[in-house]
Amino acid sequence: MIRESLLYLSDHPRIREIVSELPAAKRVTRRFVAGETLPEAVQVAKSLNAAGLSVTLDHLGEAVSLPEDARVATVEAVRMLETISSGKIQANISLKPTQLGLAIDESLCVSNLRRILERARELGDGDGEIFVRLDMESSEFTEQTVSLVETFWGEGFRNIGTVVQSYLHRAPIDIDRLVSLGSRIRLVKGAYRESDRVAFQKKDEVDRKFVEQMGTLLEADHCAAIATHDEEIIAATRQYAFEHGILRNSFEFQMLYGVRRDLQQRLREEGYNVRVYLPFGGSWYPYLMRRMAERPANLFFVLENVARESSLKEVSGPLALGSGFVLGALATRLWRQSRQREDR
Ligand SMILES: Cc1cc2nc3c(=O)[nH]c(=O)nc-3n(C[C@H](O)[C@H](O)[C@H](O)COP(=O)(O)OP(=O)(O)OC[C@H]3O[C@@H](n4cnc5c(N)ncnc54)[C@H](O)[C@@H]3O)c2cc1C
Image (cartoon, rainbow, N blue to C red; front, side, top):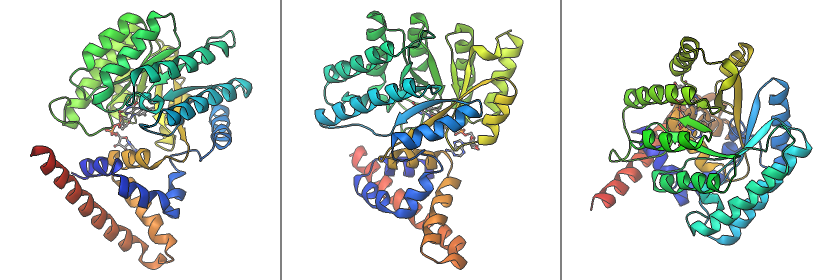
């Protein structure tokens, strides 16, 4: 219920406005977000590289409704590529197709993406082009996102790939399509609010599907990215690789910045490739809400900081807890109202 409510709030415009303005929320966001600007993200990326971890840079932002905003996101993506190249950073980039205009007009998104892929190709250092991954958004965009990869692959681009969400019923079909191209796949459980018509709802079902699909991706041997913080799934991946003679450096584990740093480092020390997904930028609200939905303890972390900022240190724990219940109740109420409207 809390997960559903927080996911509902993640795209509620009024709540977004209020939370985005809270100084304490901005401050605690730094745990999950590298900063508001590219130079801040570069600084963090370099320190992660120094610790042996590679990086995926993500300029935060979701669906745009104006072509001009999609153009701005495209310019920013090119700037990220140029910075990676000039700074010799061990990084690639991730983009949300709706940031490039997919929700406005597919042809706009295609032309913006072409510009980015061409620049990523030019900036290749002889060791390969810079890789561009399309993050997977809600199921409304899954078909178009997979098709975008097929379209550009058909045009000869080899520096594009996307993500498969194991909670979707359609995931095995998408894996077949993408594996048959040879493109890289990042496997995740899925972070959006989806109905039972399109997605498994129970954690054990999603986990079981993830493990099955992980095996398919490791066998396909196209630089699979196993993106999870779930220790049992990580153990299952290691076991699968060991039993099937799959080399540790033929795939990578991916985790989010600020989540399970101990595990990231441990896997790296054991010789696995580990990549950290490093978001930056001002539009951090929906990203933060999805992280809280994944682990409600993060909600209390945020609320405790809000309480602390109000100089009420001695009551910060109870206040955080109280605020948590209030926010939880508000979220639940809004979510229920929206469900009733949808059912009508
Ligand atoms: C690199 C990367 C890229 C991603 N890209 C996408 C994408 O393109 N599209 C998409 O829909 N989803 C994406 N996700 C999010 C993903 O779908 C899950 O929502 C998220 O990874 C949480 O699931 P989990 O596999 O870690 O397992 P869970 O079962 O959610 O968690 C397992 C354990 O991990 C820890 N944990 C998990 N999340 C957090 C957190 N936020 N804070 C603290 N601890 C946590 C907890 O201890 C938890 O018990 C991405 C995730 C990663 C790591």
